[in-house]
Image 1 (cartoon, helix red, strand yellow):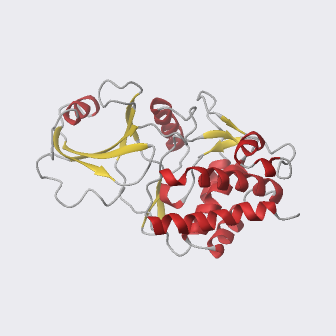
Image 2 (cartoon, helix red, strand yellow; image 1 turned 45 degrees about the vertical axis):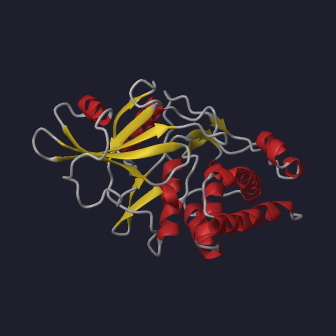
Length: 295
């Protein structure tokens, strides 16, 4: 997301100005539209960089996420207005997230609900110590008190979804009562974290935020790190997290089984090139195979 704005931010707007000028009028009254460009990434939203000029003459860079249908997404995922409220709460708590600028839960302007945030300069390339930093950052998120006024969906028990996606694992992988519920990101992986000069500058995409078992976030991140960087990155991430918060191996296996089964059931719809898809499928299956081993 970060480096795709290009170097010609003063160029005339590409394509029709409406509705982007109207959106600017709402968010920054008096600003003038200069350009608008699609940003890559994401399968459950279209993302556009809106480039304008403020009345004072300064630049105005806004990222707009417009929801779109995705069969594999939870129908109870957080709406755009609630995402904006969550981002504001997280910023108040000191977490690196984009500043929310506005949201509209209706489809009147852009054809679907949308969320606008300030543009953050950075990229998704992990530094050498990136996995460990991701682990410590996730532990920091899980230590925050969950916002009490947001309709965060519960995510405490993997058993019901496992019964659908991997019935053979539903009984053997179902652990007992879990830890106290925490605020979950819901899709914590390297592609949703921006870096600048070796430090995290923004955690993106909070539509899957939930209240539940911290092992759910751990499982998603571990699978994605395995796909991207291999076992050493997975272990470095997990060790760093475990220095701040407890990790229960049996619960982690259960959530990994669910995350892997869900990914395998939906990844054909992610638009990946064939080689990348096969690479991801192979590494993701390893977590299901691990869950099936006797313990």
